[in-house]
Amino acid sequence: MCEAILYRDPSADLRIYFKQQGAKLPVLTKSKTVSWLSWGRRKGQMGELPMGGWAHLDDILAGRWDEYFPVPVKIPAHGFVESDFEGRSSWFNIVHGQCIQGLVAKYQKERRLYVVTIIPKHHDAPYPRWPRITQK
Image (tube, rainbow, N blue to C red; front, side, top):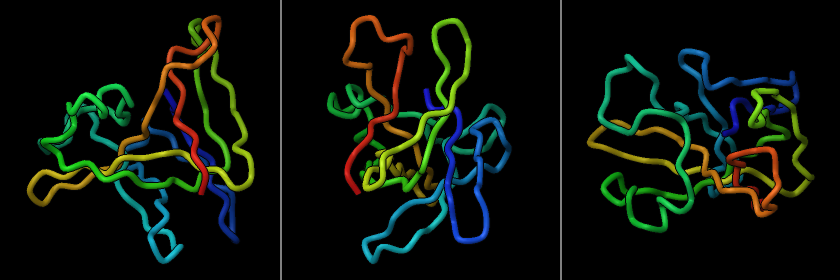
């Protein structure tokens, strides 16, 4: 379900975990700069947007996110953490020129970023969900 991402900027490697309070993820803007948005909503956080930090692609395509005016964005991550069915976490690198697809959802003045997920294509994949990887 993409529990964390690795983002490299000129000064440091940043490992950002969803479970961290106040976690924000980088987003590529149209002018190719990076802005930072709050990663989803956690239990106990005020707001009306969905709980969690992920939006399944099938739900997006079925219109279940339409009430939140979803906007697709690109998360310029260099890696991510995924847990398998047995709970083992592993880091995975993202190929140069690719990024994670995100979704920005809005409700009144609230705005949050969700990682778009898919079901892995291989029927025997050990992961229930996988972040959707796209071209930058």
